[in-house]
Length: 345
Picture 1: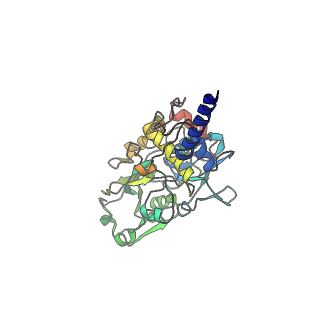
Picture 2 (picture 1 turned 90 degrees about the horizontal axis):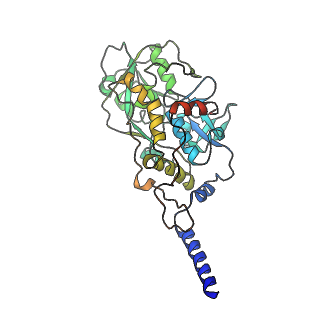
Picture 3 (picture 1 turned 30 degrees about the horizontal axis):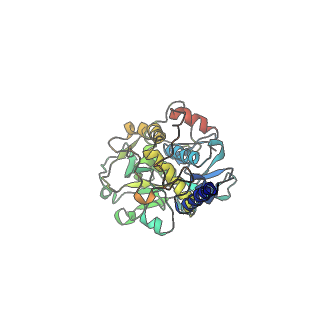
């Protein structure tokens, strides 16, 4: 009897030691991230980038970023009705300040808003997740533009609009003196249609959605462009990758949960979720944007510093690469988008 009691004490002690020094469980991370008992997950997203993130006239949001946000939210324990999207401007992404419908500012839990990971932003305190999409910078002009655009040098004397506080704006004035930034890419595109600017420069994934027609049967966007003309997408030979990440704020546990979701999507049985979102919203645009590539058609692999280990049971010292769980029941990005669109407001 004494031996049995000793063994029980020993097992309990070992479990406690492992729990103290080993990787955390998913639930422990959720508690550390402040998600336990939380009813709604607030996510800052763009509202004027077709194909990436756009608000529809019924108030719902759709796009690749929206599907990635839903994927992460699901892994964090929030189904679609418990996710609330709020529009966020480029200059507010670092502070995670989005606007509510009444105009008030709200600090969101996550920012999934075509936000490029840069060293400068990281030095300024932005905590990025692992990358979830890779694209590059490119240029839009009217299809009737008489010149050619193969590099920024071809725009040296042109009027060019871009997103303010974006990577495209950084250093642009030295190469294109007449360039300026706006806080909304849709404002640049409207000026292009109106003939107020000669070109728009931004990420190819952002610009691509303005080139082709809207898919038949889709609800119209909330913010509509006027006097729309045919556009042309130019490849300017920029070899610098724009890699989008999630701003998860200062809580390391929340960042780890986001990274775990992306890690499982890239390497685990749930990888179809990223592929379905990419095919529906970005691959479908490629035919209208050739020869400019819209985005790389493979989810970026997480860097070593972005990898996360969790254990499934208290006695595990190390975790499996991803938890053993069944693949999602849905198989159609169209069906999933329709279900979620009704609650994605």
